[in-house]
Image 1 (tube, rainbow over the protein chains, first blue to last red):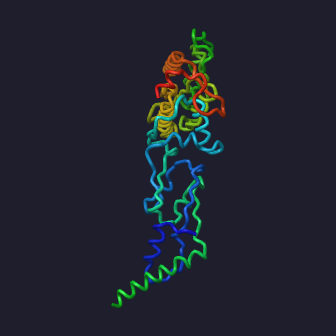
Image 2 (cartoon, rainbow over the protein chains, first blue to last red; image 1 turned 90 degrees about the vertical axis):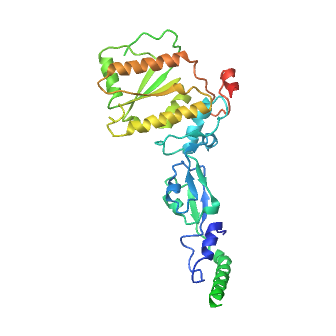
Image 3 (cartoon, rainbow over the protein chains, first blue to last red; image 1 turned 45 degrees about the horizontal axis):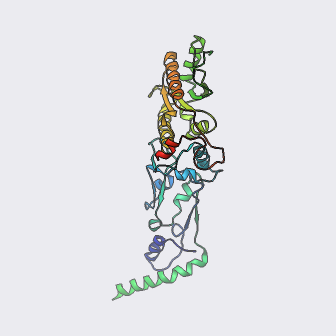
Length: 154
Length: 160
């Protein structure tokens, strides 16, 4: 199970050297775009700013959404009316709280899963790291800790 | 609510989503006073304009309406405090969506009035009716159709 880049970085900095638990970090974040309603709750809850809620919305996200999804229903109606391809992203008024583009930055993600717990549409899944993934992480962590210990001892 | 048909209205339709607290009451009062309304308009009773979602507005247009209007309370006088502010922003959002795909944004409009202003309701409906009758019928493609709406004016489609 791959840890996110940032999650691994954090684990390597865990003081004490041994990795006891990966709870809280290192989850794999799987985003189901087709279920997303664009409310931005993930961005509000995100401790590291990996998710950001945009003020604009790409109309293609409606048009390309699966027909049985929330966005897809709106997209299907819009598709019947459209005379040409969308001009570009539209600005979303403040009180329209959904239909927003969420920008997710993998590099800044801690893998904590807070976004998944807070997602009202259950569009984000946080898969905990598997037990057999731990050995892959632990040596690096202990090696880092050993190096740190050596540095302290020197 | 009988009225002489607008001369060249054709079979154009306007769906008016009316707030129960104000616009629908105003419509009721105007009907009691036997004020003629344009025959294009169909009223839909909503508990508050805050209940109107972009999906209501776009679905109405996609399923046969040539225009949709949202009639709610005066800003600041919503029975539910701020439902009509939500409606104003949603209407603006729908207008931007329509504009981005080449549909006239004035096909979706928001009006505000109080329950005690039937003439204002009638004026709003007539204004909407005039605007929609002045526009060509709204072309739309089949439900599963992809791409450009059938019968879309070439000039409009090519303008993008």
